Image (cartoon, rainbow, N blue to C red; front, side, top):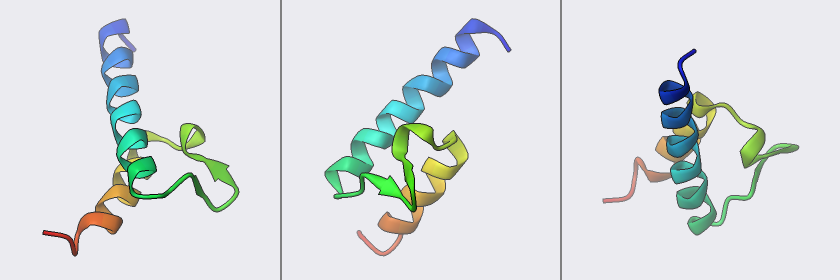
Length: 53
């Protein structure tokens, strides 16, 4: 995987982690947010914000 692609993934993960923390989410089950994949973070964020407008 290219370094630029890895960096883009890490930036998006960090962005979503910050958003989730602002929403009061620190863990999902027994995993800390930083342990989750980008897809898992995206799904968690979408689930929490889909009803908010």
